[in-house]
Length: 144
Length: 144
DNA sequence: CTGAAATTGAGATTGAATCTCAAAACGGAG
DNA sequence: CTCCGTTTTGAGATTCAATCTCAATTTCAG
Image 1 (cartoon, rainbow over the protein chains, first blue to last red):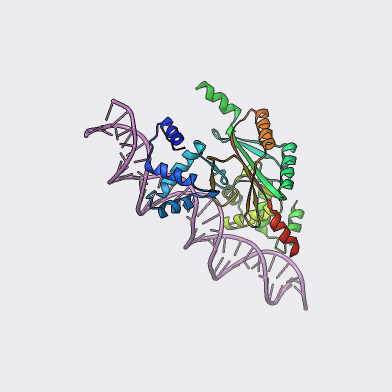
Image 2: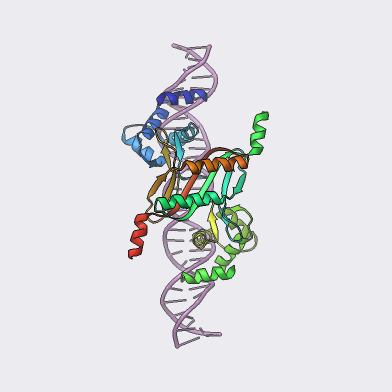
């Protein structure tokens, strides 16, 4: 694992620092969800000298390298949309240009209802955001 | 629409104020997404005297009444989880007790891939959070 | 080793969201 | 309509996660 991390870091032309290793190590030893501050206190309690800044700086790296997943936060702050006179839909958001594609799939809705039934969970609402690259940016990409 | 709003407000034993009406009116006239601050400036520009506090206080009401949907923000701040040595999964989150149920559905994943293909969108990752009431809280509910 | 470049920590800063509380608005009773 | 208890509001203060700043430190290619 540490190897995969070192490869990833090296592959990006970055440096393998003690702090980055400590942070990843602590995360690997974490069962379940965590937030950056928790992580900070956990590390400090173990005698590490890492700063919050390093944790906040390392997290995006670990996401990019597929070591961790974001569970909750999607955007920077809250966004809403009017529902009146419109149909429910989900979103595809381009990570290059920020474009938002709205889509609706009855099959997807039904499937979610099924899954909730299986887990005896009363669905109230849901949020599905698919992040990726839109066709326009994808086209631009290959030309560079 | 205004009627539905007045009914909703009255049904909750709250008061139908000018501010609440202005906020909803502006939202209904809004195409696409918005954030609370945008809304604030839009209203002030039109001569309204609403404060940010009222907007932030009204938004949860409008969500509850199904007038608007939250598009981005899910929780209060960022949460993550380790992906190494684990399988991708999505979450059902109980709005009563905060319990997090993890689930995985290959069918759901495939369906998302299909939808992305249809929209010529290169999926990188996704977030699906189903909010509702877990079986434990649902059981407790009926006893009260 | 050496030195250029990247990274770090402490503390300052930002900014969305929330809180405080006196003043104003709402709405049921008369 | 008026009165009056209750709710709601606005301005500004506050909170706190997240980001930024910058001098000191660390990494690593040569």
